[in-house]
Amino acid sequence: MDIRMPKLDGIIAVRIIKHILPDMPIIMFTGQGDMIASIRLGAFTCLLKPVYMPQLVDALNQVVPKLS
Image 1 (cartoon, helix red, strand yellow):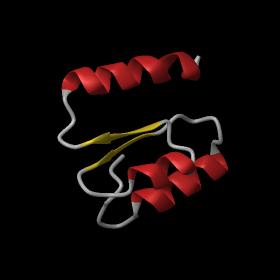
Image 2 (cartoon, helix red, strand yellow):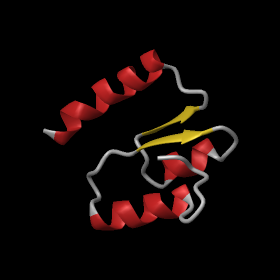
Image 3 (spheres, rainbow, N blue to C red):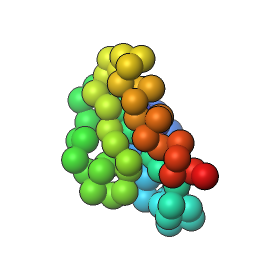
Image 4 (cartoon, rainbow, N blue to C red):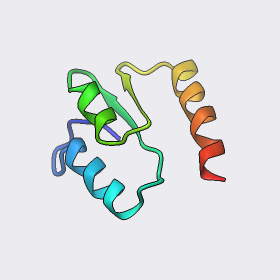
């Protein structure tokens, strides 16, 4: 999910998701936002845009075992 979204700020979305599903791993994306804030709130990681496929695949490979 992006940190900056038109209808719902990504930082607020992380708070909501973590309140409802505390164990859900969240991968954030940003081109300019606060990467540290999203991780402090519980995002698994925050990738800087443009996101390249190897970065995304690496993050997903780390997250998938957490979903099992």
